[in-house]
Amino acid sequence: DNAYGQSMVKWFTQELSKTGGEVVQGIPIPAGTADYSSYLAKLRPASEAPGLFHSVAGSDAIRLGKQIGEFGLQRQYKIAGTCDVIFPETFDQQAPDLDGSYIVEQYPVKEVAPLDSPADREFRRVFREVSKGVPAGPHSYASYESTFIFKRAIETAGYRGKRDTLKAIQDQAAGQLLAQHRQQF
Image (cartoon, rainbow, N blue to C red; front, top):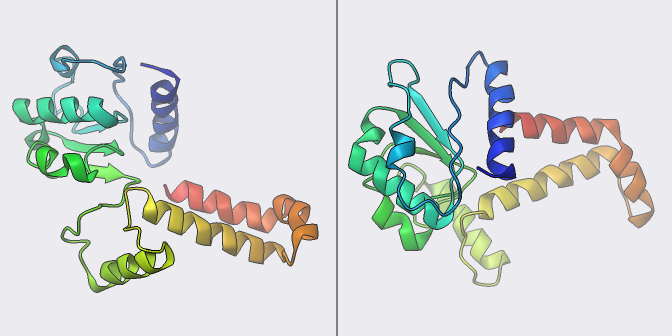
């Protein structure tokens, strides 16, 4: 129940409608909520609203995830959320309560199936090498991916040096490339 949460509801409603989906209910929850049971009790039955998306993060997400698990909601709804349970200090604690949930925009710190593939191991190896020993973290892949999206946009604009900065910013093809990337997410 803040500007970030309200913008998430607005954005998610707009974007979901483009794919034929519908947000049937928004439940604003203040940051720092200790007990989510009164908010979870407001959820429509899974037969009416089979999916649940939340934008709760940090210690709030730990408490929310725990109560989702206590109420068995992860077995009733398809759950997706942002940046909440894959930090190394909370993963083991949260995993049983949110088993089957989809986490948006995060890269798992731990090597977990099905992501633990040869390509994933190679990404982790290269990331550690390039970052001088720092392991890949929750935002690593998004940062890595964004760097290459911007690189492609700059190349599309024909950027060759500092003098081309304004040209790259104003280039429509580069702007379209970035817009297409944003629409994928």
